[in-house]
Image (cartoon, rainbow, N blue to C red; front, side):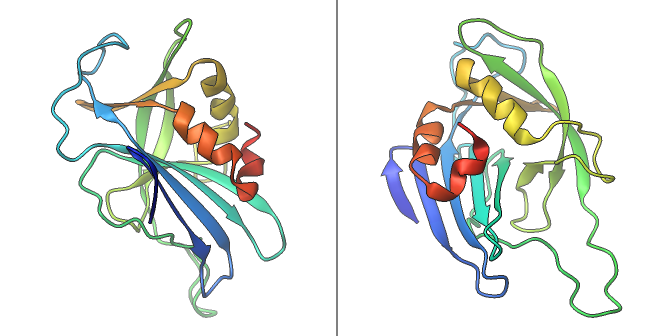
Length: 187
């Protein structure tokens, strides 16, 4: 794990079984009261929430970007490759818990919150990711659509139930622009 700045870290490498090149950039956030204004005072954060940009390059050269996050208490920072069948009888990927997360975007103006489906990944436990469009997802937009929102409205608030985590994404975007495998994000 490489510290890039206070509250900003990076983990890069090549996953041995899949040969996927990866970079995970972690941005610490703050907890705020749900439905509070964007400049609300933070709640105590001994274990801060994190927003994670995960950029990968498959052996074929294809680039991919995902957005992960958690509401604290996740110490495992490792990269886990996408599920692949272990043998011919292994037909279905493990099921994941899907949940609706409200995504608020703040900046020079405010837009209506987007309520989109995220899923808790099987590993690392407690981490969730934006669920990309598929037959297993209610979402119609790729995460890159919302990354473009964040270019103009650089404060993201994720609300799940009674927890709200807020992130200033500018340092995350600056780090992503420096990573060649994060080109698929288009920022």
